[in-house]
Every structure is written in C-alpha cells, then in structure tokens.
Image (cartoon, rainbow over the protein chains, first blue to last red):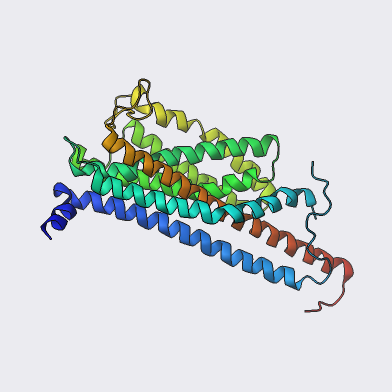
Length: 67
Length: 251
C-alpha cells in the first residue's frame, strides 16, 4: 500500500506528471474514437447510396487503363 | 466517373483494410510496453526527479508533431507536382493527428516547465516556433474546410503546407540558434545520444508506439476521406442523371 502511495506521489510532482500522462491518453483516445466513428458513418452513407443506385453494378476497376 | 481517380484508392482501401488490425494491435502493445517501462522501470532523474516521466509523452508528441508535418509537406509536394490521387488525401488525413500531437507537446511541456523552470510558458524560440506549428496545422485544416471544391481546396492547402514547412528546421535548430530555456538536443545529435539507456529505451519505445498510433489513425482517416469523396461523387452523378433524364425518381 505504501509503495503504491509513493508511486502515485511521483516524488512530490504528482500534480504535473499525472495530468500530463492522463491528458495525452485522453486526447489520443478521443482522436482515435472520433476517427473510427467518422469512418463508420461515412461508410454507412456510402453503402446506402450505392444500394440506391439502380443502374451500373459496382465495377471492380475492370477498365485497367490506369497509367 | 473518373476511373483513374478510383484505381489507386481502390487498391489502397483493400490493402489498408488488411493491415489496419495488425498496425493497431502493434501500436497498443508498444504503447503499453513503453508506458510500463517509463513508469516502473526508468529511474527518476538525478536532477529533475519524477518529472522526467513527462518526457515519455512530451518528446514523442513533439517529434510526431514535426514528423507528421514533414510528411504532409512531402505529400503536398507530390500532390502538386505529380497529382497523385492519394497524396492530398494523406496530407488532409494527417493534419488533425499532427495538430493533436503538437497540442500535447505544448501542454505537457508546460506541465514540465512549471516545476522545472518555474513558468508555465516562456516566449522563447523553441516554444514559440512550436506554437506557430500548431497554428499552421489549424490554418491548413481551416483552409480545407473553407473551400468547397476538393481539387481547389487541396491545391491551396498544399501550397500553405509547403510555405509553412520553413518552420520545421526553425523548430529543430531553435535550441542551437538562439539562447533558449529549452534543453538542447540529446537524442539525435552528432556523437550519439547523451541519455542513459535506462531512460533512452523507454523513450524510443514510446516514439515507436506513437508512430504506430499515427499510422493506425492515418489509415482510418484516409479511408473516411475516400468514402466521403465517393459519397460526394455519387451525389453529383445522381443529380446530373436526374437533370439529364427528367425521369421521376424511382425511390
């Protein structure tokens, strides 16, 4: 127990060390979650649009004329 | 529809989907290992005590802020010169990630500066040039949002990105060119690192972890951007076909 308290105290610098680490974890997590949700939403929108398209099947890049 | 535009991105989507889970897993494992090494294995610094642990997130954030911008500038050059269809997608997808890294470098640096220098912020060369980098990121993102046509927005943003790249060497060498409060380079320098292995190893592990994290989020954001462009193309095609046939919409 005492070791845990000593560890958390960070030699008296807990007020600086922990906010730095927690903020980094928070920002990186939020960015990853936001990016994933954005991808999910756009792929869902794309799927709806492609389903609504009556003519033209999804061409599998069949033209083969890319330079 | 422009099939040339779709050719490369289609291949990218398939390739990116295959490697994404691997890169993401590797990023999580490396960051976990780096955090463990940094918190439990690395000793406190003999002068700075435990505040040195802030370095394990501060230095990787700052490096990534520079690295991502350098990558964006290279991608912008490729987009302007060769018009590679993925280059401006990569640059656009990178910007918010680089902005987050730069923001974290500034805030964690502030949290480290207060106990060590006695000030949250000083207007010295390293800190100010880093703040300019954050504004460059924000300006780049704002420019993309301000112009509707992706082709024109991409061109303007690429030029802004290349002009802003002058800040990168200024940041890197600011600690040598001017008297700053910030410490000089201690890892990438002639004559090798001056940091002891017990601190250097966790630091390098965190840097690898941050890079893998960047790649993970970059792939996700590039896929989202490609999906958004495809949605826009389909919408425009639908409007065009409705205008040309004048047929009633089937549903």
